[in-house]
Structure formats: structure tokens, C-alpha cells
Image 1 (cartoon, rainbow, N blue to C red):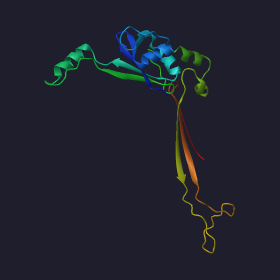
Image 2: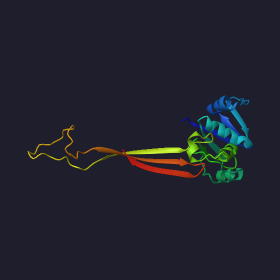
Image 3: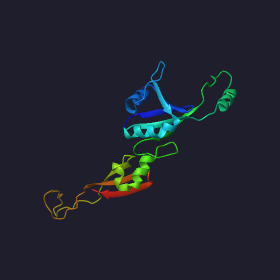
Image 4: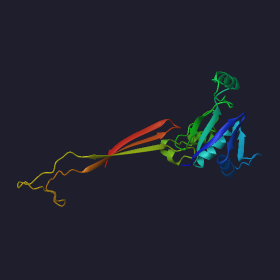
Length: 196
């Protein structure tokens, strides 16, 4: 999976900088904005479409939003102890991360692809081939060793011949597997367990 792709919310636009701007130009067809650093962006209303295109291209998309108002920044400056550097910028935090396996939808997202798939009868069975997003799969393997002791012959010698079928209960490793399949878009969780 690719490194997270960052959208910074500024005013009414989402902006990308440096390598993210380069990806925006290559994958989304943007042009660079004027300035000394690589920089591109798009209006807030296009967030869902742009995020979906990047997720479909295999990127993790992180949305960074302003979590503090200018008034809150002034209050934080006033509370800064003497001798400490006063904050100059409002706080920003990652508010959501979208990937193919953890794709969820909010009011900013383009849900038309989801609506189209649902109208075509797509369900959990078609999730793996879904163009909207795939399920998240987790597999856990645990190696278990048996506690049975090999049978011994009457002479006291250990009878560990692999080719005889005389009922030896030799210790054999067994792997147990736990499988979880999560489809976040449809709120479906499938669990399974088996031994091999």
C-alpha cells in the first residue's frame, strides 16, 4: 500500500503539497499552483470524487482539518507562559483516513458508485470485485503441538518409524487459522476458524 496522501483543508479548498501535489498532478490531472513549492488543490465540494479516485488508485487518503478557530488560537497564545514560544498557527489534525479496505462514506463523499452497486444487487459476495471498495481481511495462524506421547514397544525402545501404520499417536504440529473479513461500507463482519 502507498504512503498516506494528505489533503489539507484551507478555507473552502483542499490543498496538497510537495509529493502529494505531484501525485495530484499525475493521478487527478491537476495543474500546479503558483509558488516556490509544489502545490495543487481543489474546491471542498469535490472532496468525495477526488478521494475516491485516489483510493481506487491504491492510495491511503488522510484528510487534515483545522480543529481550532482563530479565537481559540488567541486564547492559547494568551495562556502561553512567559519565555515559551507563542503558537502562530491554528491546530490541524487528521480527521479521517480512507483506504480500499476501510472505505466509509460521509456527507463529503461521492456515494454514487455505492448507490449504483447496491441497485445492481451487489452484496458481500461481490465485495471483493467491487469498484467502490473491498473488504478488509485479517488472517491469524497459530501453531499448536499435540500432547500425545508416542507408543513404545514392549522392549522399551521408541517406535517412531514413519512408515508403519500400527496406531502410533506421534506428536504432530497442527495449525489453527482464524479469519476475519470486514466490509465497512456494508457493516458486515464474517468470522471463521479452521485447523490444518
